[in-house]
Length: 215
Ligand code: ZN
Image 1 (tube, rainbow, N blue to C red):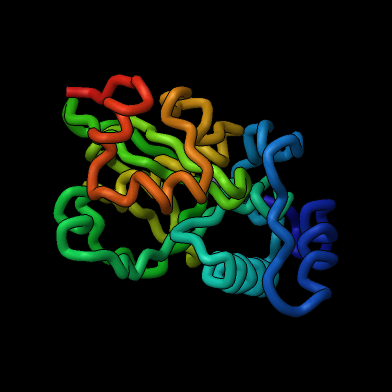
Image 2 (cartoon, helix red, strand yellow; image 1 turned 30 degrees about the vertical axis):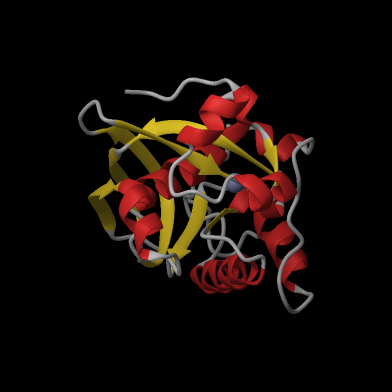
């Protein structure tokens, strides 16, 4: 725990980022900050600065728009992420992908472990890999352990699309990008996605592009 009077280098960096109003610039793949494990949050930002940083992450995520954003994606190597998914999707997509609305949450020092063996494979994308999507097979259910922005312990099971978001964002804080876990042959540009692969599941894409789905 940093003493409140000492401004840490991370605090300096965050103050500098927050000096400009509006959404923060998102760093993209190729920046080493996305490949280093982030530092556990242990008071490096004083409570008031942490609150402002979390608010800036929220604005940045909503503006992008995205359903999750990790601190490393704005260049800050701290284990903090935000998630939020209003899930404005058609019923058939909601059912196939188990994409239910996820309220705004702050994950501090998150980690997850699988619950059961079920896996689910769907296209996903990342604000730090703009223009592309790929199919990732992930645990369908995970147990998340974290703290919230007030330091309260979180120990919760997530299922379906929210479980995917939790895994994607927590992976970011371990220096892992979704492309590391993706089916390479499923890689599709946003244009190809819009033209061909808007189906609720990636089965047709798997047949046409030649990759395997779990199960
Ligand atoms: Zn991402």
